Length: 345
Image: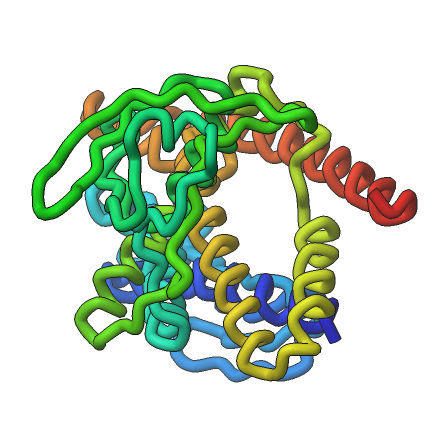
């Protein structure tokens, strides 16, 4: 059941991404020859106008095939449209991922409430207590970054282990600041020595559900960007990346852990994972890497500055090389995920 849920979640997120490209292409009168949900052989299809709508047998994503250099007639040719229109079409996919993440986050916060960054307890002898932090203090920012959720404190501690923390907090309506150096534990982790309130989650109204839904998406985007920084600075290895197999394993494990607590727990767990995955896909697609939306947008940006399109054959070659490198990376990640799965690590 967990694997089936993983396929449905991942497939829906990717299809929604392609739906973003599709909508903006239609708005800008660009030909869309094929809009598909899933991959592989078509099991259901219907042609309306120039577009064939397909439901394909493998429910992992989708496709939006637009008319480009081979389009019949220049009116619907992607490359004949103004550069700003093409930019909007390219950016629509990642933007729709952020929209989806936000909608799911609003639902999740409406169901669970939100975790305010209010200190519930300080551990005896740990840095937070020595620095004067007390129960009821609300964390406002850490190292200049605004804090809205308790998990953002944990994220900062995980991404910057052992680093000095400049914390701004609110007590009795007044803001104060303090510097804390986390304490190293025997297992190599670092602790500030604070824990959340017992009533960890605060019930959300429709307004706060939207407000904290936005914070949820921001948290997911930040965690993705922080993970990329660790990868770039070689603080984590490429072997720690996960692809569809790894994601499927995580979803399956999360389902098995939550199912004993009832359907509501399963729904909340799957929503939380879907938010993270959708935001992650949005961020990754905006990276200026050839073959990704960010890479295509970069070429359009160059065209806008030059006021002249780069030679299509050169652009196509760069995207082809980029796609080849991405496929090699995906093959490595998949092999690594399968190895982990077999070894049980």
